[in-house]
Image (cartoon, rainbow over all chains, first blue to last red; front, side):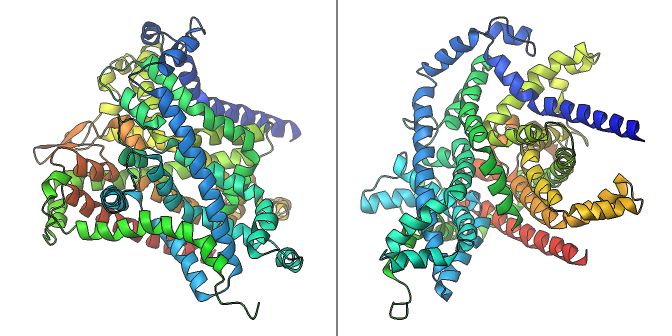
Length: 286
Length: 313
């Protein structure tokens, strides 16, 4: 009985390891393909590259190619992701806090409105959004299309419902005594939130930031509509789509561009892994 | 507290930025869009004189367009297939990584990693795999037929050239690869919350692993099934990025002697209707309204059905 059990777990372990390798195979293909020359990738699409130094050559030719605009797109994506995440994390957290701590009909109605808005697909608002941003420009002179400002605004608008929902769930679990003590000590509501509550929210901040970060970093449709392909301001997915969608496929360089788009999110995930897994599951089971 | 007004200034101060963004990018465009779908809205130049109300013409035209109808059928097939595939694979993976195997934490993280990669970038990776790697590997594995990329997956059609089964299957493969790890995490949390005592008691009563899985684990994670089927249904139905980069809607199929994009999902059909060729924004918008209502109906039906099943168990 005992030996059969051992064989069973061994079989299971080998089976899992094989699946693991199969799941990661596309990543292997991206890495080795990024390290090959244009000729090598056709003659040997799967094997190890002849010379790993090709990786650096490919990276620098992507990074410095004026037609792909990878460098500016990469910087723009970092700015878009970082600023949008900061805005969402601060604004959604403070909104969630007043919604939890104010027990009125209006407050619960606003919360419900946000939750309900999560079923609205981007597709139904995307076309009028562009036309609405144009109208706003005509009336107020605030330029939102092809500018950072419009993208930040859009990500706060589309990301706040989900983030508010996550913060709301977390804040409900924070004991009220803490805040009452702060107020007895003379804290205003404003400083109660920023000095007492905000620091406690650290784990949920990490979860919200990573989940929104995966979305914003990789998003294609929203920047496509608000920034447009091939303009001065582009994000990485737009640049990759522009370059990889062309008729002649330079697979070695496409794979390098893809690799460079993947690395930041994968690194961020590995650094903040425990928060993501915990928070993501907590948010979805409730 | 008693003396204070019902909603303090801080209430509005803290709430106004998200409310403003919400109104500006969701509420206003939502109602504008509803109105636009009843007009002759097209590229900006054509609408210099303002929009004209045209009634339900955009809806009528959409509902008789073979491209839209095909895309509806294709999206339904894709959604159901992808939902089943993702959930079966994810549940299997969750069982594996919740067992006592060595290195299960590494497996958990590893299976999740595909979910970090954006659909657009992913589509290109898999295009390379389907079009370059598989034709290269085929002959080496003794399958010379795979050597010709034209014969392979992305280009296979069936039912007298009217259904692009290969392209659709490849979308499902990529969709499953991408999201199974995420759904696995939800199953994993549910499996881990099942009390160990239940399994021990059943084991003492002589229940084998299969029986325990079916009689304990599956019913106990019923709540997770509600969430996972909901998420996969909605996300599959909204799929756009992979569609754009992997198949571009191709290959063409023949519907009533008319060439129609065989793997064009609804989200892509909406975008293409609005921007390509005829530049018909109003009809694109009408399609997105239909898309929205179908999505709402699916959500309501799915949640009602799963909740009912949850209670019965």
